[in-house]
Image (cartoon, rainbow, N blue to C red; front, side, top):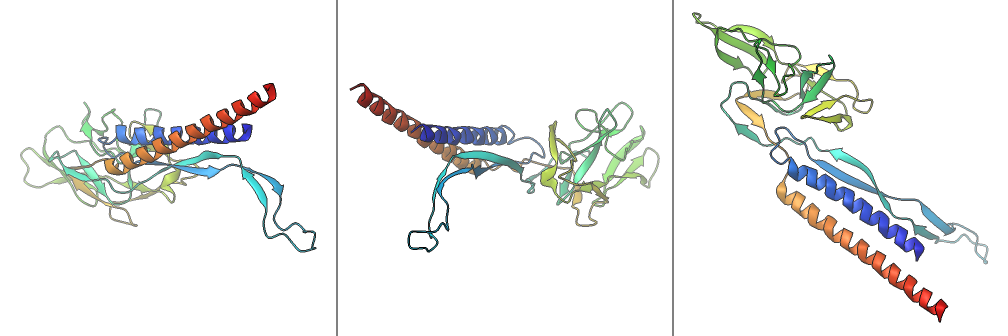
Length: 263
């Protein structure tokens, strides 16, 4: 009975962690470029009273075993990088990646981070930066006399300057891909950084080497589906409830055993 209490407790803990993942997904349903998480579980070690294949009294190997599972734990949380919905903003500095890839961002310490959030701005120097003021990599600066900005599907950035009829190319927005994007470390602020699990970034121009193309005037929304998350929430709640009932039942059995001893 003590074993049942411990096992049910692991189930409650696992479902509580699942609810935290679901809650975070729902909280970021309107976060630009957000990618949903999924909680995965694995069973714990087993107590073996009789191993499979042991010799029976007849001298033949036993076809069955006696094993008791010791519960469940969260094995990992997986980022799902499916494409989010695209929304037309008609803002020339809003850029969405349609397909694979990440924008490269230079952080204040000089290291490069990666993001799907393409809602860019310009700083006081004319550099294209994130909402937190981090410039894109490679750095692109818009001239102060620019009257229009054009970003091609291949990442080419051009401007038309005052008094000119032709456009001038001022840079190229490159994108990074990873062999295992699920291995990227989430940093918050819509940023990721590479890790030993993700591998090194593969830098390409948009549309090359399997990368997505850029869409100017669009932003990518969250890929969180509210219906799916609500179903996951209900499943987690019911699983938590049934495990709590297992705890209550085990407690009742212990109380019955205690009463028998006292009697």
